Image (cartoon, rainbow, N blue to C red; front, side, top):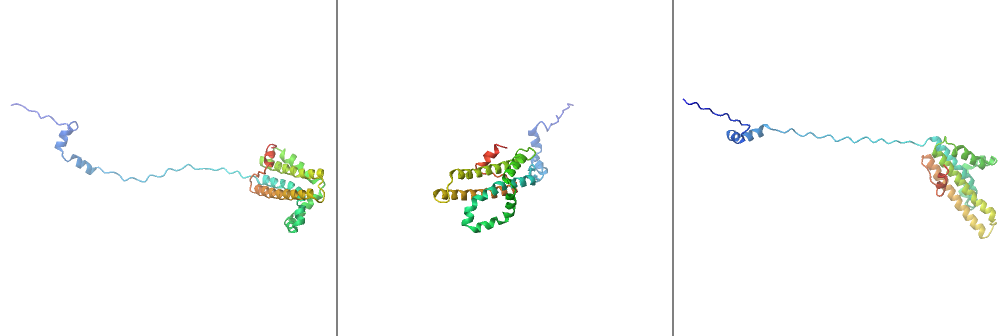
Length: 208
């Protein structure tokens, strides 16, 4: 009796036979396969930004603001023509009269204040550059405001004529300029900002 052997079919190696024997293989596979719902991805956290804020110390702001009173007090003499023409303008400066009287009562007060700021603040490395720069800028402005007085004494424009009118106009302009510089500089110092006056700032920056 002849024996016959039936070879075993390896379904993994013969995909054609596998498809023939199991016609619905792909359909069954698709029924049991499912996909998980996609979860919403969390947005990537942006790196925290840290800003360093170093405010100007109150002592530096106070010293800087006081320094600008020196050129302001010395420039009030330029406003005599405006005060004579507009008496109401003097009412705005009445609160400063006690301080101005005390300042004028000290002999050589402008020279004392000048060298006090120059030697005590500008040339003192213990102070910050903010206080030293503002003090030097105020001193530079004070020196520039003295120049017109020297020119006036040399030329002697007199009490009338064209020279007198030119002198009066120049005094009025210098007074308005000095008041604006004083207000701008003091407000900037109170806010902790660095005021930069035209022409004066570059000259002061080279000395600090």
